[in-house]
Image (cartoon, rainbow, N blue to C red; front, side, top):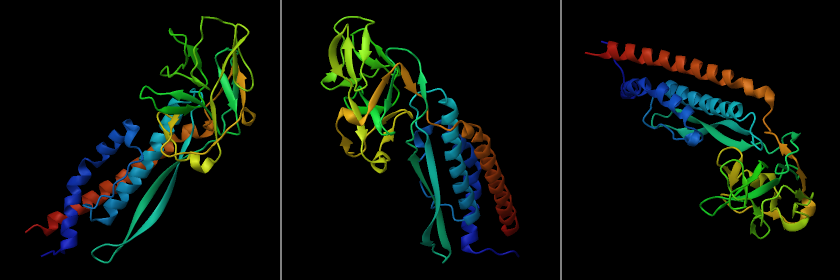
Length: 289
């Protein structure tokens, strides 16, 4: 009679878990809000299955990133997000075997995107060594930061973002034009003139440290909120605003086609998991009384 120990017997439960695993991760690809959340699957005892799951998880993250790049290839101010993958030693399991996890850590590439001229009076570009952002107000009252300088004037005379119509902030709060006008000039320091009269200055936040900027949380790839305080450099001498221009997304065009690389990696890892599944099923059949 073919015999198996308790450790191998427990592995047979992994077979049932694996049956819906592929579909579950493809669901995650469609819903990016959980892209970087991670749980170690302690109930999975077979190391081959666990390694395959973590490999699929890693390729899924890269696939989602490249999908976002492709979708936002024409979105001004979109910031590329990369991922560090490291194999972290977690100690030993109950059987004395070494345990490892794939640690997935996202990061932003804050380099400035190319400048494109639009000649639109309400389009703006910030030159601040890749650390400058326009400041807008969310419906919750919290502040958000963006490099997407596509602005418009709403029915209330407020300067708002083209995307989601968030109010753009000036030095004294919302920027409100007293009357509708096409005579709008903005200086390189952000001072707005309407019909030749000074109105206010566009509020620009220039962060001091790229390291601290990694703590920002993105809403959609082009709007960011603080998760902890970040030091800001004050003064209009730290930036230049260019009217009639936009910052294109900063994703290198060469990598937008790499989405197939991640998809193929995911599919290959899934096939490995399926082979392990068949092996476990065969062992379970041989061990049955």
